[in-house]
Length: 318
Length: 252
Ligand SMILES: Nc1ncnc2c1ncn2[C@@H]1O[C@H](COP(=O)(O)OP(=O)(O)OP(=O)(O)O)[C@@H](O)[C@H]1O
Ligand SMILES: [Mg+2]
Image (tube, rainbow over all chains, first blue to last red; front, side):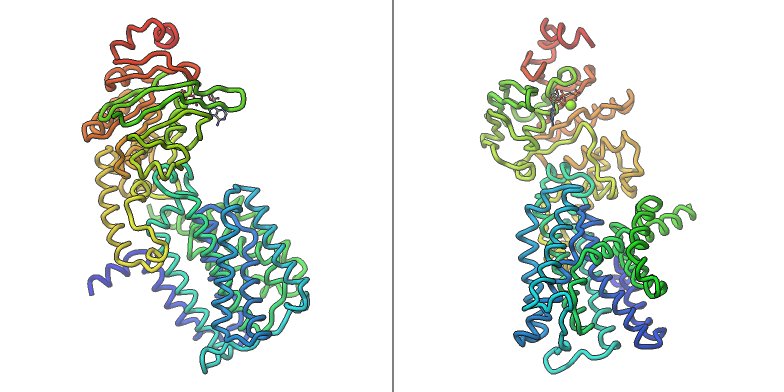
């Protein structure tokens, strides 16, 4: 019992408990299907961002192409279930294994690059994926996208916003738990050391390339899984899911919420999914507004929202 | 057999010959210093030995094994450790975590086990944290155990870096200007720390401009000038060497 108390006191499990409570209580506040829909979309993005934050925030390796992996997951599920009548779970797993392999093969050459070059390479990767999806219309339906069937888990169909809410909430809690475990482990310290000083990490015995590849693959697989979830939830996929704008959106969530802050990334996802809902009618300006948020955050709040706010609170008390 | 042996080592950067046909041996258990004026090639030599740079030609043997083609992390596994002239501390981590990074190669670092936080990970982390705290005490920065690295003053960071370098339990430790930028008292403390490290059985290779420190602490010196060996010997021999006096000590 005292062991459990001790666990809850550590920031790691304290935060996780708060997240579980929020996920459990939130449905009491949500009043209609539309609000559940927004919550689910926040959750899907948040899970992707939890993975992406490990790569960008903790390891210091930018990726402007992760929507590509999200799109690959979404289309794997769509194509395998619709055209080949695979079960949804098998398609999701096949998609994530496939994306994992692609990410693994590409990671070594890509992650040799640094700074702008890495940004350009991942940007190119994402663009190539979205172009292939848009042009191979015999398989993908082209720019118009394609419909996706429901997610059947054995005999049970995940149906309706409430059911999806619980699925996504469970995935969010799971991903945060995994991420926190990684961060506070020899692996997480290796990742953060790559960010802090790659040469110091190397001479301390850390195979930095190995860890950069691992975290790239891990974040890509998470994006793919959530792409699959998104495909079945929304019932329709289009190439925009894999596109450049979606990649930028994901990076903005990481930067705004907080680089190297797992909960911050979730906050970033919340804000950037809610914002377009509040600004409805201004769709044309969405991209500009996101760009502005990205710029202003980097200039005035380089650590991101959550770390800055908690830093202020701590500083204020002292 | 000497612990480290360098044979006909050459390193050129374009037209700059940073190391030219350099050979020497470092026996086990000594404090061995490499001195020389700015730009003599001391840091380049450390980068070559630790695998950060690849030699243009020549051989480096660690405990008899040719290190050609080995990456820094592989050399670390063979007992090599170092600090940096321009301080390489991870400012995104706490002080203790920086030292824990140093024990990486002795821990179970499987990604899947870490992701699920299996008991072997928890156990390894606990032991490694305790050891890191002990090393911080040993290095004289024990009162920063609860600190973030970016909250520590420069002098303390220099010693934190030594603590991290010791965490891998090296056979041979390379220190690149550990006293640079420190005041007299701090330098004396570093002097004591290096002596403690040497007494614990670690072979120490030191690059340092502070002559008092170097002469006091080392059993053997190598003097570099323009990437070449100018002289080699005990502190007394070096002090009386006319070439050294002309090129280096006289000027200082
Ligand atoms: N990466 C590099 N690229 C090009 N030239 C280099 C590089 N590293 C070192 N050099 C050159 O090699 C020579 C030796 O430099 P090095 O840093 O090894 O000297 P040092 O003895 O450590 O000097 P100091 O006492 O100032 O630290 C210098 O001329 C330097 O400009
Ligand atoms: Mg130097």
